[in-house]
Each structure stands twice: as structure tokens, then as C-alpha cells.
Image (cartoon, rainbow, N blue to C red; front, top):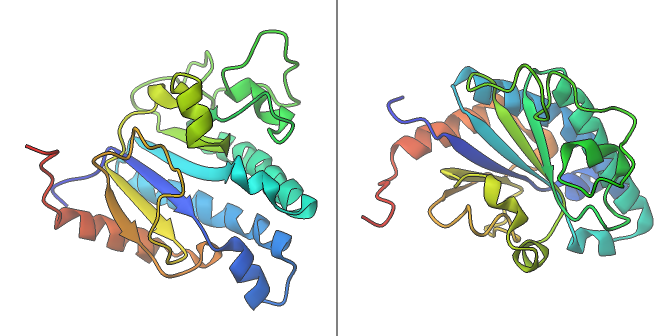
Length: 220
């Protein structure tokens, strides 16, 4: 491949639909998305991708039934725990002042000094003051309790996340759902019909091959 995207956004949609198709409660689908996330991370690192941004959950998602909110919140906490073992730098962006934001993830976000840190502080795999904070270490951003209106009203807290070269969405829906509007301005948008828990590395390989065929001009 002659052109590899530096930064890829990931919208892992279809967890609830997958759960229904398999006779499970809707909230049971979120935990099934953890292993696909690790698989994609490893595939991206193999190809030299420098940065990934995963869409965890939005401020609007918090309007769902309590069982679902608890499930996707817990899945985000577990995702960070698992990704810490992959030797990546982790950064979490979202509304930390809301009760929907998992307290365990506060060490990975920009928060006021008087907020109590969670049970697992940043380690060598995280972004905060670690020896692995180097150009060779992949960065992973996780959007947790994120909303584009919240981001805009707070002077674009996400501004430290670079422009996305490509956004991949699973689940067949052709929309951004508020995913990082500033960073998405020139992103190429690739859709997979498969539901996120059914992720295979072949999906990611196909996305990279598709990216080779795009006419990347950035408006020039």
C-alpha cells in the first residue's frame, strides 16, 4: 500500500442489533464489542497507523434505559483496561462533569484538579506523563459521553485530536452521528454493513485498500 492514513476514526455501531439477533438483551451487545476493538487496534498497529479514535458513547446515548447506559459505560472502562496492556497512549474525551462519565476514566481525561481519580491511574501505556509517550507509540482516543454541541460550547475540548484521514463505520448506517465534526472535515468515509461484534480483520484490510483508490486533495 502506498498511502496509509495517519489517523482513523472508528464508529463501532450495531451492538444492540447484534444482541437482538442472538436472542440477548440489548445491553448484552456492548461487551461483545471489546474483542473486536483489540483486534482492530492490533491490525492498525501492524499497518503503521499512528492514531485511532473510537466512538465510545455519546451524550445522547445516555437517554437510553439505565441498563444500557450502565452496560456501555462499563464496556468503555473495560476497553481502557484492555488497551493499557497493548502499549498504547490512551486519551479520553467527553463531558467529565456528567454523572454518565465513568469516574474510573477521569485519569485519562482533562478534568479539574479536585476530582478524585479512578482505581487504575495512568500507567506506561497511557498518555499522562509516561516513559512510553513517544512518536513510536500508537495513540488511542476514546470518546466517552461525547457530544458535538458540548464540544463546541466548551471551546472544542477535542482540538488536540488531529484531523481524521478516514472514518470507518460498522452497522451499515451512513452518518457521522456527531463524531468529531472539526476532525471529520476532509475524512474519507467507509461503511461496513456488518455489525460491530462481527468485526473481522478483513473488514479493516478492505477499508485500507478502498482508501488507496480515493482522490485525496484536501480541497486543493
